[in-house]
Image (cartoon, rainbow, N blue to C red; front, side, top):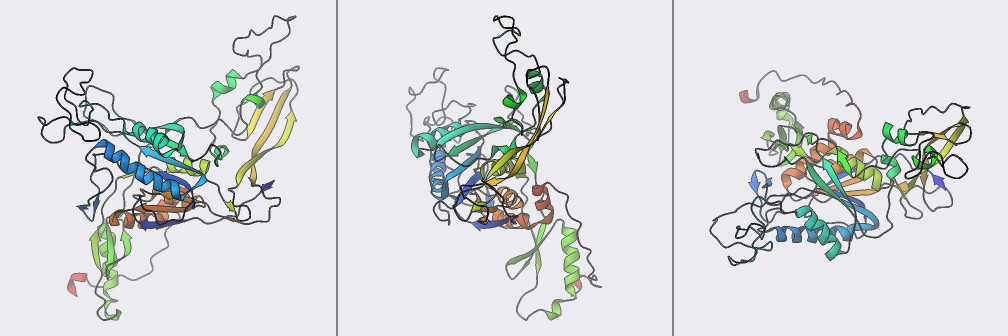
Length: 469
């Protein structure tokens, strides 16, 4: 039966940890949304220093895929059997690393003799067993390994089409404007709520199902006594809530400009500032209060903050979270509550056969008998589980991003009433995610609402500069 869900305030949890060794209990996560690092493309730093053993810096593509599989096996441990995994992966081109005259190596790093592995071009040199300038195919190698080695089910490959992809200097191929998103599950039946993310039907869809349109392969008039052939019914053919989301998701890369500096006191970050001017202004304001601070506590200082310009887009996380994680978990049966939609009204409009544009919760149909017009309204009216009553409370579902970076997925999860957990090995990224998940402006962006006005600062500025003390 239909039952509601409480308005639960979500929250974001930032953990500095390893994606292959998560500090979480077995089957405690409802959804995993993440984007692992690219292979052999970028060095991630911690405090401005490259840290060793980071995923993406492996010597060969096979080692990189093996590292991802180790992580994915750990994700499978913490993921509920009804949960889903959404992984965004970009590809990399094969290129020479080091001395060109060295022996070619296969994808696992093993040496090949000069006569082995000749590609389409006879005698062409190969790197990792792949010709130079060739895509390595890492996303699909990983996805197939998840199926073959981990026994996961690959439900869908999704193309993320970037509206504002980065320019490239190449002149002999198309520029890269997409990446892959793989939807993986542990079992055939799993939680889904695609009604939450259905899309508006297109005008072309209405035209196909207009009164009198023939079915594929049939004429408008059948060969049986001149009776009308069956016509499509909008009510039976077009879902009242809209069409299923397609396998091409188009949205832009999301730029992220974070704070330029932070206030540090006794080794702890106290506050972030969008500009150095804001930080220095705050320091001048604190100058008149230093005499009252405990002895030996030290004085605060401003430190530069690392910038992270390429962030995981909110829209990617939002679609996965709304479509494949429950808004609440029933505390009685332990199931995620599913959206329920019902017909809320039927209205006949006589013999008018005009097709009227449909909104998200309205369907216009034609019953095929004298042109009667049917108007049906339908929408999500509640949420249901297997409980016989509606009295059991709910707890928020848990969303995990094991390569959390700047905390995008956890922030979107919290904005939509879930518990978002972001894990990253870097101190810098973890600190940045802590700022971002608590920032009012970033939270408003994730909630797709206007930023609330900042409260006025009534404190008096210091009458002297910091340098004068």
